Length: 510
Image 1 (tube, one colour):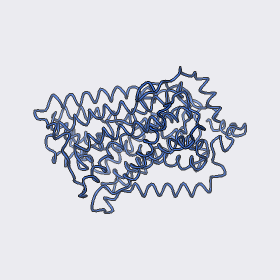
Image 2 (image 1 turned 180 degrees about the horizontal axis):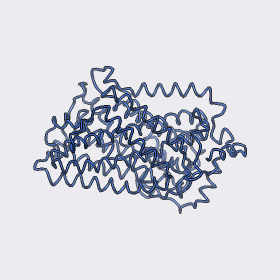
Image 3 (image 1 turned 90 degrees about the horizontal axis):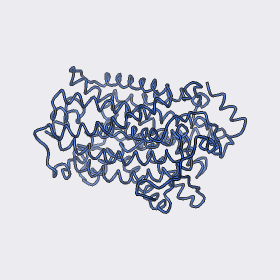
Image 4 (image 1 turned 30 degrees about the vertical axis):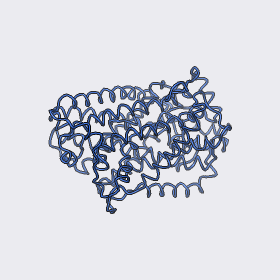
């Protein structure tokens, strides 16, 4: 390795080489390679979206450990997530396909490993769309409240959420080139937005909290008495935000020099977000004027109250708009990633109605039906928010519990494979095993952690439904396995590269 975060890599492969590699993996190229290396990094960076995750779950963090857990938790979680990303990037370099995690698991562990990894990954991606776009709807309601006295009731928030989903569906139907452009703009929007928010909060308010408050203040409003347990639960803010970097892998078949660019995109999106996110959290926390009032804000969004107290109505509205646009970029990128997962999983006949979801437009080379399926399912996942104030927390937990284990499974199988694993052009070399095992242990820890109840007493409203969601998706996946196991398979197991199946895939281009 030339550095901690970025191993050396040979010169890039041409599009023709990448297309040939894809054929060797068993797939006929049908998606257009119109995304460059920066665009590939940008999609994962946009999905991680510190202006979405950090801002949306900031209120949760205020009660589950407070400033100390938010800041130090971010630093610690970011380091372990970087290990996960490094390990996943190495496997991505060897298998640069839209299926990404489940394809890697299938090739390294067999059909059932691929099957369950795919369903977990799909659950996480669809939960992420719901969480991101519903968070954007909450912030949009807070903005309207500041500007026009709009009351963000659950029903009105849901209507905003549906409008955002429709916007993202339409934008994704124009093709990956537009998605790439929007993601590239998103990178600079996020970085400039963080600089603007932190700069304004550092200069404008008359009062700032002390460094002791920001880095040592512990707050427990969870109902649990054990501070270690509370601090562990508080890690959800960081772990939820550090999700979605597999987007670079899912867009591999639309990226030039994907064997290197997708791997680099994963790693760079994590460490850039790690640094920028810490700065954002510190800037917000230093600027808190009244902790209790901020938590109980009428806007429903504590960061909005921090901006309002520190900058006044005009400044708060302007910066809140910056955050909302960043969240819209994030949701759009997540729809792109999720739809490619739906497309790839259907290409290998894993989903009910696969013949429809794998169809690709011959004009935009976009999986149109997969885009619509992604936003519709995300909308259904968020419906409980109409009836329960804790439902949004359940959606974010579903995202984490679905997608986080799916990251570790290919890494574990790569470690188990030993010398049978043939690295791609981007490799960790001698660091592969120690980094990989650290990543696997961390994911096992957080998977258990985020199934635990987050508040006490545990009631229907306060219960953590992540464990139930995990059990439901595994039961459904198991049941569907006995129906689809004869048809499901990657090229390794189902001879998908045969002339007959390639002809069937060609018929799916409409």
